[in-house]
Each structure stands twice: as C-alpha cells, then as structure tokens.
Amino acid sequence: MSEEIIIAGFGGQGVLSMGKILAYSGVMQDMEVSWMPSYGPEMRGGTANVSVILSDNRISSPILKEFDTAIILNQQSMDKFEDAIKPGGLLLYDGNGITRHPERTDIRVYRVDAAAEASKMESSKTFNMIVLGGYLKVKPLVSMENVMTGLKKSLPERHHKLLPLNEKAIIRGTEIVQKIQEV
Amino acid sequence: MREVRLMKGNEAIAEAAIRCGVDGYFGYPITPQSEVMETLMDLKPWETTGMEVLQAESEVASINMLYGGAGCGKKVMTSSSSPGISLMQEGLSYLAGAELPCVVVNVVRGGPGLGTIQPSQSDYFQSVRGGGHGDYNTIVLAPSSVQEMSDFVELAFDLAFKYRNPAIILSDGMIGQMMEKVEMKPFKKRWTNEEIEKYCPWATTGKKKDRERNIITSVELDSQVFESFNHKLVAKYRKMEEEEVRFESFQCEDADYIIVAYGSSARICQKSIDILRSKGIKAGLLRPITLFPFPKAELNSIADRVKGMLSVEMSTGQMVEDVRLAVEGKVKVEHFGRVGGMVHSPEEVVEALEQKIIGG
Image 1: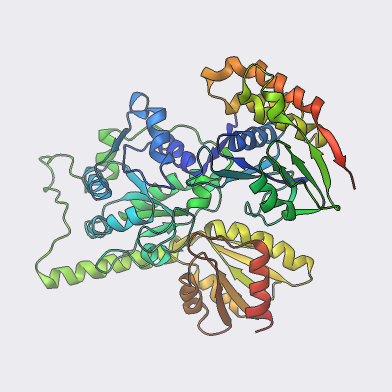
Image 2 (image 1 turned 90 degrees about the vertical axis):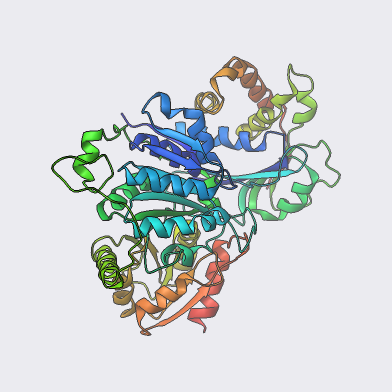
C-alpha cells in the first residue's frame, strides 16, 4: 500500500498540522511516512501545502508531481492541484469559498463542508480535524485508535485537554462528508 | 526499547547532538535551518547533559567560538544555511589549519547572494574543495533522510576527532524541513576532563609538569616548516580517501546507465530508477554518502561496464566534475538539475537521462 496525498489551502487553516497528524497516525500504524511542507513566507492568509506519503515500503521521493489524493481547501489550490490527481484518484474539498467546482470526470470527488460545520462547534479551529475525518471516512487507511495516538503525539501536552473536542470533530467529519462523483 | 519519532531533519540534528554528548552549540538563525537552535533552546540540554547552547551575535562569532571550544578538546558544533556558511569560511580555514575537530551543518538554500530560502545543492564546491583559503579539505557527509540527519551527527564527530579536522554535514532545505520517522539513539555521556586529556593530548587543557605546552595555531612563518606541515595535511586527506569513502548503490549491478546523486536529489532519483526500470531501461543509482572523500574508485570501476552516467544535483553542474574526474573519460557523463530553489521531479530526471545519455 502507498498513498500519496497533497493537502492545500490557506496558511492558518491547519493544513500543515493536519498533515502531521495524518503522518503520525501512519507512524503509529507502523507505516513508512514522509511529510514535506511548502515552507517559506506562507503565514496566515497566504497559501500553504504539504505532501504526505503513507506507505508499507521505504519511501523514495518525498517530492511528487502526481497524487493519489488531493485535499483542497481554497480556490487557488483547486486551480493548482486538480490536474495533479492521478486518474481514478480522490479529490476531497471544502465548498467554502470555491467558485469553480472540480471539472474532471476521471477522478473520485467528495465534499466536506468543514468550515460551515466548524462554526457550529465549540472552536472553529476544529476545521482541519473535520476535514481529516472526511478523508478517513473515504479512505480508512489508519485506524481511529492510531489517529488519536497520532493526535496526542502531535499536540504539545498543554493542549491535551483539547483531545476530546478534536476527536468529536474527526467523527463529525466522517458523518458529513458527501459523495459527489465516483468512477 | 526502540524509540521512534516523527521529526523534521533540523530537529533530528538538534536531538542527535544532545544524545551523542556534544559539549557546545553556537549558532545564528537563518532559514531553512532555524529549527536546529530553536529545538536546542526548547530542550534546554544545559539542564540535563550540561551542553551549552548559545545564540552568537553572528556566524563569524559562531565559528570562532567553535575554534575556542575545539582547542580545549570539546565537542562543538554550529549550523547555518548557505549565506551564513560563507561568512564562516575564514574560521573554517583556521580550524583546518590548526587541525581542530568540529562539526558544521549546512542546510543549503539557493544562491548566489542572499538567494532564495528554498532547497538547493549549489554549495557542493564550497564544501568539497575546502571553501576558505589555503590547501585543505573538510570531511563532507551528505544525509538523504531524516534518519541520516540524526545518525550523521555522531559519525561526523567521530571522523572529526579521528582526523583532527572539521567535518561538514551537507544537507538542504528539503531534508531539513521534511518530517520522517527517526529511530533515536541512546544518550551518551559527555567526555569528562580526564577523558578529554586521554583522547585529545593536543588540547589546551592546562600545562602539566610532564609535558610540553600545547599550542593551537595555524600560523607558521618559517616556510620550510610550513611546507612540511602542508604535506602532513595532504597525507591526512589521502588517508581519508583510502579509509573513509562511503556510498550506497541501488540497482547498479546489472545497470546500463548510472545516475549519480546525493542527499535529497538521491531520494528523487530513486523514484526515477523505479520509473526507468518499469520502462525496461536498466538504470541504477550511485549515492555518494561522503562527498569528500568522493567514491572515485567505485565510479571508475562501474564505468567499465556501463554506457553512460548522469550526475543529478540541484546546481548548474558541480559534482558532475568529480564524476568526470573519477571515470577518466571511460564513459559519457552529463549533468541535469533544477536550480534557484526549484526541485526536479522524478519524471524530469527520467526525461533528462533519456535525452542526454540514452538518446544523446
């Protein structure tokens, strides 16, 4: 098994930490993992993306041109990465702020309206965990138990009181993700 | 028990330094390596192992603090990125001239000048050809994974002390910033003063009655004496070339074509090899782990049985010169690489091999 993922959105949306939690969940499941961020001037408001690879085998290149899955959280990323998905691959996106919806017909398309859902939760910072939940529902590559251990390892101890809220958000994501198109 | 963590390359350098018993780290922040000092400050090793961590006022100060620490037989290191490493070259030349061991980590970014903060491999010449003034070499290790970022800190210190010579870990923004699994090494105690006197009889630890004064210097105004000192240094570098060459070969046994790549570029090229093999092209990867000493003999012997070689590096063509020197004209050697902070994709490498070597 090998899953090559790009997660892309605005800085501040929790793109990098979502990738880190996913990667740590893979570590907990004894997979090989890599996490390669776009680093640089991307802070709040700019664009940010991270490539995550989960694999049963040794990972060669952490730099990729095509992905099995693209998790897309703003229009700029839709424009940039829709064409980078392998045929038959998965596009998961949040409809908030999207003006041009996915157009390809040879990929699986799922939608998770995480921004809208996060505003109903105790903290809107749960946004990225709702997206993660949506992804794990469509591709259950790592067990919920390992995701929670991964989350615990990624969060500094002073934030551990937020673990139950994050778990709730992940579960909420699994519930609200909707299928747009299968191939 | 195995301790496995998910870490950035830069974080792995910091953690490994504490664990292998480093006495002092002196540095100055610069992207993309700032997490090295940030992690050290966060872990506060001065409260546990007694390791000193200091943010110096500049890179020039950092490298001269290394000179002072190393002169006392201490395990000292610094890290920076390309422009900062350029500032350190005078100090590195002095360290090499005074035969002092130390470790310098370069998390390379694109140049020349302030350049870009994105990854590059354009400091190859600076690292393997000395870098500062005078006839000298530094030991250069090129990690291609976060695990190697961790492992090479101790290896670099072992080699630096074995040869009384600076050792460089030549990484780049990609390996520094990416996260991978790392198996942590157990903690080692720092050397005691007695151990320093035993392992470093040359160090300035205070004159004892039973020995002459130890003097650490790189100056010698008698040219006859200095000529023989230069020959002594060269003999040391030749010994490194005989004993310390390290490389990894990947599907080279039956290969018709060889890609030579180090560090992050070697990771990308592994995937290129997979693509080439799936197309029925017998390609292999030779990854130098030590850039100085360079795996000349291995490349020369491979050159007898292959049709061509491609040196793939994020530079306009530096290591390719060493590959050409190594194969002595036996086969065609070309260069490919994106520059300026751009990173080549595995597919671009495949295309370059097909165009420049197979079809060319």
